[in-house]
Image 1 (tube, one colour):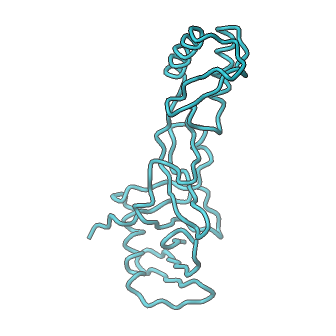
Image 2: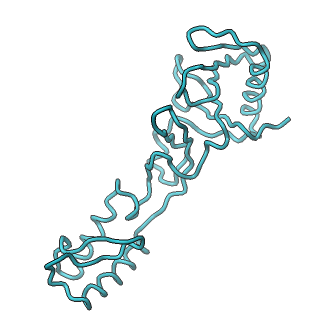
Image 3: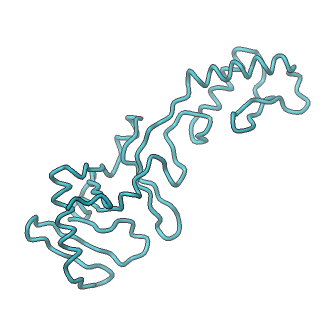
Length: 198
């Protein structure tokens, strides 16, 4: 029987004391980061320089001090600050320019994250990003459930789930005879994965 409630993540930075794979709930794989992190280059991402770059472009184009402007509202319209000498006509031109600049320069990622709650905070682990430099340091890769390795890991997990658990120091280990995988379950809250596979 094919399982669609769980998925397998491969540890791309696997070392001897770390699991080769982890099994997580499929519903925890999402197209956004629950912790708010982002690789977008947009005004919505406070971690990037998009707003700074747009304001510098406005200064260059209109010869004004961008400190006299502020963003407001869902559409990120620009407004003149109190005591500003920017006229309504100029502000309309600036907003038109800003919209064009954003259309030409903003970039939105289509990421994939594993989001889980660790008993105190939401954690987000990047699985894929269209920003290539972000992919260079990923720890995990999502395996397709039809992949031969994923099928073997899930089958071993299913056999481990059916076996009695012997808990020691918060962990129960099952050695799968068919694959040789060691499936480790944890009783620790906030562990994140359903099981670790060594």
